[in-house]
Length: 468
Ligand code: AMP
Ligand code: MG
Image 1 (tube, rainbow, N blue to C red):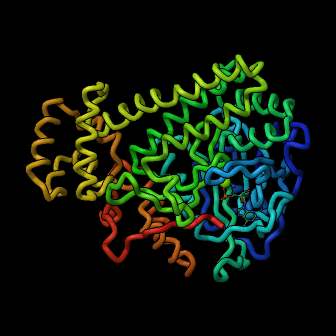
Image 2: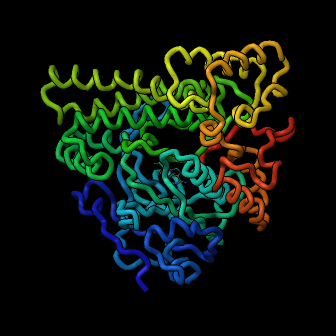
Image 3: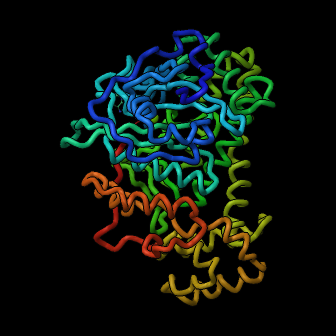
């Protein structure tokens, strides 16, 4: 049976832009989760869903007809330090398919074995990060945030050695491309203008078809990234590793490692265990995104023109991030308080609320959901200050139906993700499935109301770890 109709444009690029490499087979694969809705969009027929053929392909044990597995080359700034070669060290791009919506989509295995870019890594992933990425990326999609998607998680039947031995897994990721700022950096570092040109054309054709050259591409990337970060902020989302290799040129959320949604609101909140200086704290995300885009602009300079003209042009575009972000942030948070077209004057109304929330560590998601349902007052100890704010807010005539579409009832809270992972390691996928189901309609209250609860003191997850 033909599983997918592949058409692999990336592997038709010059062959120094990637490494041709097959996944390494695993011992005893088992399909743990399949995203059937996404599978159908990819053209997979229903009778393939539980076929051994699909399982073997998603495990990396068989190469599907038309697939031409490659590992992509990329570089990146990790926590501000440039690393000239990273690349897919444990991921294989199986190929691209045109979805039922007409979109060209990458199908990628992650955790599928070593590649020439693995350095000292084993090329594998364990079950925890695979399930975490599945839950969080699919929740992002349900929130309406641009993101990579998750098609499947396969258990490998093998152990991977981390601090301890853990069950191995492979996640299948689907995305409109995997072109990162770091992909451009790889070739810019090597003064490879031809590759930069090809990558520019590919980024345009896959993400911004009306763009006409590198300046347009930069402008489009700056705008979509600003809009993306505003959406993250509106959900209390902290990416955790906003390195340039994890910064998607097409404005998707990519690489769900030590990411998390905040419980109590704290603008300086950091989760990632490796982010010791808070570089990627919640409130720093817009600045970091702009910094990453400045690196992108630097890569494009040779394609734009002679430096004395290219630099001022590119600088202006990178500088447009800030006003675009502010506008987008106001729109996002305006809707969160029920205003369809929030005005400059509403900015203070929003920041005053956020300051009240921060002062008492009020739960971010619960607070906005309670504003929607009309019972936020009980979340605040300082009732007078809240009441004062509430009166000002009511003066702006907020609309509940706008808020209901902007404020999720349920988010993938860290303690619930951890609980789902712990159960899955013991062979029980029920908590994972329940969480996944609730997150597929996140603006509706779930039947299990405890999914809306903030963690108790003992349940709070303080640090999240890279998906290694
Ligand atoms: P990440 O932290 O997932 O963005 O990964 C950063 C870089 O390290 C990428 O080049 C990854 O492919 C590589 N990497 C991470 N974990 C592994 C692993 N277990 N084996 C090989 N490469 C890895
Ligand atoms: Mg990465």
